Image (tube, rainbow, N blue to C red; front, side, top):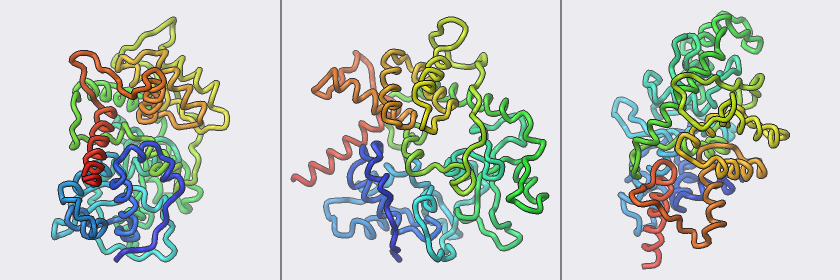
Length: 383
């Protein structure tokens, strides 16, 4: 049964949502009404068309499936197969962060199984890769010290009647999850001694993430709708998905450390003793950190990823200045838009010539695919 929901003003201002086809944006809003109070809904093209596009005869099931893929590729919705009947379901990842439920009803649809790593990773992204007990970062890649790795904790323990539904689960460190039950009062939770050395684990996780992203950028050369691009579209995570600390209100403690270089780090141009990504990060924060919640670790990772893709440092700095001047988050996705604006000034025709043999990849390819899909729907409207 459809329910009354709300839409935040930030929805209309998000630049990456604006790149999606108009029908995909409409579908995202429709999922708020179709989802239960846990943010779970049935996720088949036939059901979605019947609920959201019942009067739109120009949309086929294949068209609806493409619109659904736009939402899942960006991580706004997480698809899964659940229940004894093996139904195709989906969960609006941060449903409770932009929907206030006055009298929430118990969810009747089966939640995703917590035993699968993609499910645990989805909840970690929802919680901003922040432990909801101690407030510290969680490594995004599995590290040697298992106490620092990701675990899922139940707000209300299963033994006390708690469920696996999204509102009752949260991302924590393994050590914190175990220590929680040893504390008499959760509000006075004291991080366990097993968290010592967490900074080294975070550095290890970051270096591995940078190396993996560089390998993936070279491996992907053409647009493939089946390839997830949630990392490239983290602007959506910033404005619509990510939270800070426990229940979305806790501020992270301290300033994230600047990761050390390792032998496996990507090779970029260096001048003097410090890597160029370190110097660009420091220069950006010195100029734009005041009044903004910028993360040194996040900015450095984005800069290192971009430089590893043979981006001109001067063009990168111009794009960073554009983001800093407008107080926008520094992500792979927002950088793509900054680059596009800069190149548009030099190329009014809005056509970027590619070198011989060069193909689109990553975010550019995905955006290109969405624009082609939007043109496809526009041509149907004008026919």
